[in-house]
Length: 277
Image (cartoon, rainbow, N blue to C red; front, side):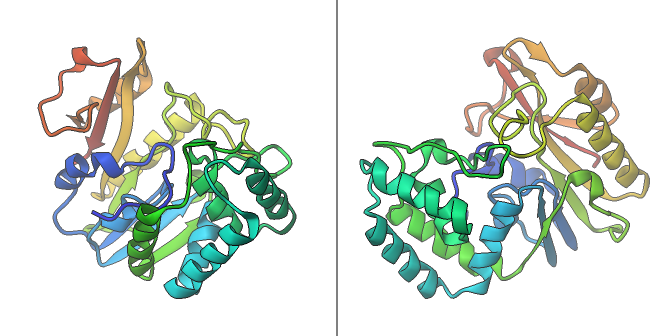
């Protein structure tokens, strides 16, 4: 398994051993509608891979990786870490880098801000300034990050990147043999990526409904899809999701990311994969 060097909130790396066996065996074109840190796109087998996300900054970062050799990237990373004195303890260096990024918007600087930032979050304010605080004594760029970066860089050459709201993603080109995977923000488990306060659009009931309609349209054209979501979280049920899922196949995933049978009553969160095949 290839792990993204970005510990993206909501990333699916630990769930891949459960997800991938549930995906179609043969895929012509794969569409990752909410690509995030690319954990799924990096590990899918398909003739063509298209990865879409609304976050233009993260897609811009992946494009920077595509456009430069891995040796050049590692060299620039090490030079910047040295220039700003970035460590797990040096908050001053982190905030100096953050100020520089908000002036110049260098993808390389963004990558290091995510590496050293609190919970590795991509967090922006309404003015478009990156405002995630320092991840003191916890976050860093290390040998594991570099290994993951090298592995990602090799696979990125085969991934087509796209920036856009899922509502505007045109699926007309998709046909039988193609496969769309959707891992949207979860309505009932609000995080920093879908609370509408981080410089990007939030996620509400209307977004869920529009996504359901988009997936229904694919189903009518005999195009396979899979949707990751949670039906219950901390005692709250996504009733619209449960009702919509009744027409499809619901696969219950292990909340502890282990390969054992899942019992819905054993956890506050019921994580599912909904497929039309």
